[in-house]
Image (cartoon, rainbow, N blue to C red):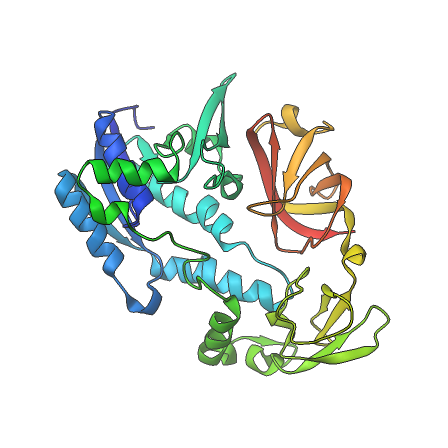
Length: 365
């Protein structure tokens, strides 16, 4: 183990948040090294690299780049595509944070003899009885704790989170007051980095390029994405759809059909290429099961009736009770029904403001 020191490796995306994080760490007395990961370059743009390098030069800190495009493609993009192709709703940002970005920061820091690792995430952490926890950011509109439920103690013990104590408005003011006007006025990134708008266009383009290399039941993925049937819960035909991967459970908008009542995607049948539609009330579930879970402290979460579960980055907070099944899944008993629970989504657990863990939804009923 590297001994604790005042050195920190900061993930620098070139955006406002990580740039202000660099300034705040420097002013707090840390020796900062910035690393910019090349994960995915939308439209082959590398402006973010230049922005990060230029900022590091102005701040007088060391900056390195790390080409992680191959591993990002394998672990994140291919997972993202595969999940939609099996009728699930993936959570790439959760997977990237917990299993790629933060572990990669720790690996590089180890190689450089640096103890602390940091990012521009809007979260805080706290230590209680020798255990570290992620907690909410001061800015509720920017809080990103939902994405970090998979971090283990070896990572949590080393992270610095300089943005958790300020709001985004304060972050922009912080940069402007120090003469970094470009940093202060940068637009916020929206959505998934490799498809910031509608995932359907990305998926279609990916399948055109790569769909012939993946085969299921004797068919390539490209062949499987074809026109199919919208049906009701009894299997009655309603209309035609463009292909089951382009719909998600709970979806109402963008179905391309007009009925005299609101309908929502209840289920996706990948074998039949059918999308089952229903009323919103038919989507209500009272329990779900999670795989690939992480719990920070079992005593604080298992069997308690006042745990809060979230299945969205925003909205939908619900109380639940959590147990572990003989199959080593987390069973989540919801105290009030939730709608639009989809396999592949993430669920995160909180109590008293502490992020206690989370997992990936396998099924719900």
